[in-house]
Image (cartoon, rainbow, N blue to C red; front, side, top):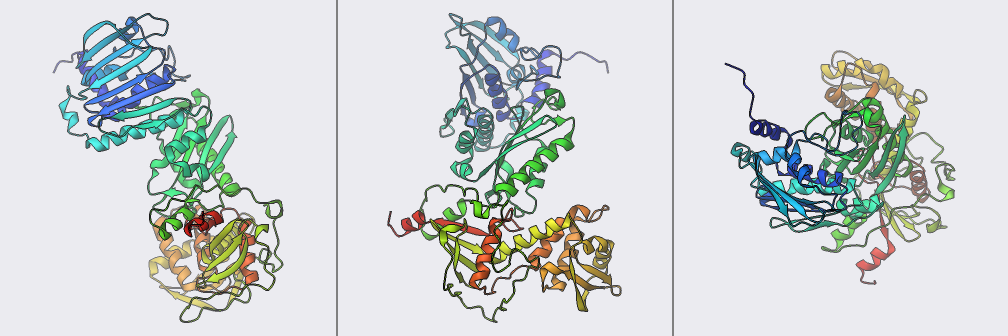
Length: 600
């Protein structure tokens, strides 16, 4: 078969298969062109999920007749000249408009600001229908009708109109976050109007428009730099999480991207703080020399490749973890809102302000040491704890004769323990409800994690070794990592083909169910064991041990022990959520309590 040159129309249709996958792809390309033209107002209108109509209007620099004729020709662009090493615009390939014109009915009306009149060009199925003068305001209006009419096979792969309209909405949201100084309006017969007014340099205000006002109250600022790569943005507190990763936004030099390396770094940064199946909310902006990142990986330009991916990942993980350690101990403000809604269906509490930094008395640099010595002892068990009764009845711990002042500490002073599991503390302007097991679990885990990086954890020798019967393959896995488990204070030996002898347990766990701990560790090792051993997973093991060695639900605490737990939480990073990502406490403001009783 002889080789022949393909026609220009067919070449454009092939390119369109990569560049324009769905209506949202076309919307992305047209919005990028408007932003590159310096627009401060962009209006998007759709019909039929963008398949019947997609119109993008802007007040950018506009084009003259000569520009319009070149704009619909392949590989014609004003954004780059001779190199791909210094790309500072969103678009640069010169493929979007000719690709759209080859599979749809495309019309572009444009006028330069210094021009007395405008011009319009129309393309259908890759053929220029006409180029003529037309009345137009300064800027550009691009109208795409009957998308994929020239390639009907592609229409079969599109989703429902609602799904396609939703994809366009997501594109607009990402662009809106990246460019807060631009006003975006999304409207059409297939949707309600969505408007994002310009917020200037206030990026957090724009994020609140897109992600909801709760994000402002639950966001931690990020500002880090490593080897001339800068990272800014906001990360949500761990307890402010969602059911999917759609609320994670990443930008590289202002370009919205969906890069696997960045998403993986976010996941790693929140390890041990987010429950399984839940996802953090984050907006990250990476700025670096354009020569250090390749944005020409795919025609859609949503993937990038970094020259030093390890450096970028390390920067993201380190910055988020540092921010969580600094300010991530507070619980999400939505916890109180959810509680109030459960009391009164339809009740909408006012937005909560985020908890401010600790007072000087309880600042991490000057940790408060309670008189009971809770913060001074490394072991997890509290002295004098009574074991739960066979049938746990609702119990209230007596209020101390001389109660601590409620306004002295961020988490207040303990006033009661209800159902032998929840501590109720009074703060200066409300109350706090603490899950004692979840809170103490986090404290033990942080103590173990800190000790991991300094020395072998102290262990306690069992007078009589405990023999645990487990499957032989689980015994093999555990013994392969006996040395690493020993670093955590857990000394084990093989006891026959199907049993493990536990001789030492971590001292800080106090009395522990060795059988339950060994079986859970065996299950976890079977799930994620690697040839490199457990060295990269020691924190997961520490979290498992912390859960087994924490104050259990159903144990009654004395008032001084409850207050000691509160004080320790105030100086421990990440104490706002347990090792599984659940909140350890919920705060209710007095004003919200009064609203429940109709007092305000």
